[in-house]
Amino acid sequence: MSRDEVTRILAGNRQIVSPRGIDETVKVRIGGIDQWLSIRGKDRRNPILLFLHGGPASPAMPESYTFQTPWEDYFTVVQWDQRGAGKTYAANTEQAMAPGMTVDGMTDDAAQVVQYLRQRYDKQKVFLLGHSWGTVLGVHLAQLHPDWFYAYISVGQVVNGHRNEELGYAFALHEATAQGNDKAVSELQAIAPYPGTKLTIDRVGVRSQWEMYYGGLAYGRHDFQFEGDAEELSPDYSKQDLDAIGKGSLFSLNHLLPALLSADFDHVTHFECPVIVYVGQHDYTTAHELTEKWFGDIHAPSKRLVMFADSAHMIMQEQPGRFLTHLVTDALPLAQKAGDAAPVEVTRDQ
Image (tube, rainbow, N blue to C red; front, side, top):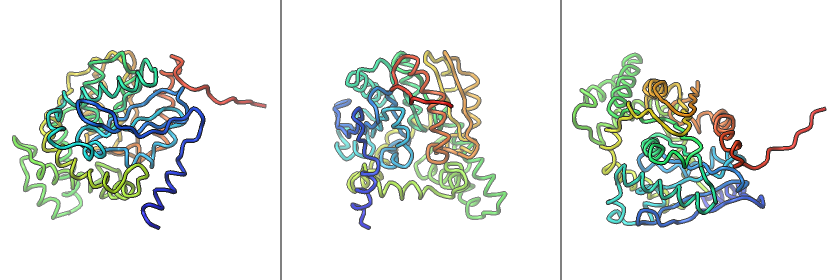
């Protein structure tokens, strides 16, 4: 089959046909540039869930079809290609995007996205889900505007960028040594002391390669090819959009890597909205120990930690059924209490 045929079949399979459904991919003027949103849900009476993707510049939109479709029964899910990522990178010049390529600039972008969604769909509050790099923006936004959110949902939380690099490196070196992988040991020792005082994309790449090889990104997997393959068949992305991912990633890392590595939320622990933290028990892309400690220090109207036993960093793909179950049991009731949800099914017991 051609790519066009496969994407046509996938798009038809997940087409939203319910009368109250939403299925839109829209370009919105945010932060002075054109930014792209995918907005999908079976019933517009359901609450909105805004997904802040990781990276920087690793858009979740192209592979979201592999895990998101069941979410759309319960939420109107918004995938946003951030400044410098995917469709948004392809729609703008680097010169136009560059001024806002800071944590503050992209947090402001995120705030404008939330305001757009609240106004367009007449919602007082939405759910804010941050994954990996997206948790950096998520924490800042939840701190600035807690009244906009039913909850901040943290997945693969960045707590302390420098300490995270230390733990990811130590994990990779320990595993490589224990398993007698001379190539990995040699490459990891060559970048010691790590992270040191100056981190480059190349040095981070060595740590990331071997941490991923030993399952710190996706538990039990040596690489991330399964996601790359899924992106290639995305019904939401054209070939041009796919080509933009790598270009956008390099552009974004050059601007944002220092900010990611210097992120420090060790003492950002007071939240005025509920906080739900999802942790992969084998995560060393954002070391799970740091997130567990951070959760213990959090003060919020309510908080919940869920540990996923067979996941690392990519919990949505690794344990999609259990992830959805927790979204429905941990998050959705917060919107249901406010009347912001479609009616539940009618049941009869005999």
